[in-house]
Image 1 (cartoon, helix red, strand yellow):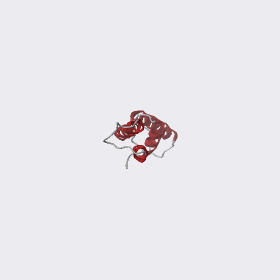
Image 2 (cartoon, rainbow, N blue to C red):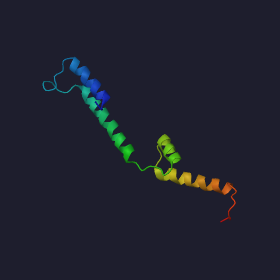
Image 3 (cartoon, rainbow, N blue to C red):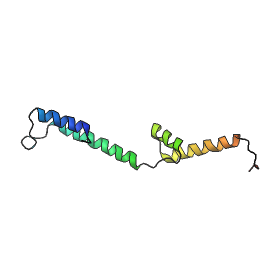
Length: 93
């Protein structure tokens, strides 16, 4: 089953003799359903968020939960600063 807490709650209630069509749904099952619903909504939200453009940016975004636009701007600024420090053989711009 894709919802482990719901499965555990159902198993416990069924072991106690709960018959789904005879009595009201126990609080434990209602709570497990709500919990799993919230987890699913969080997963959907995470999947739909725009991702940072670079691998490093995506790692930082995942760690901090920051928006992709902010992470991209920070990595771009850091890259520009690094490039200014590097002495190249080509002409200066």
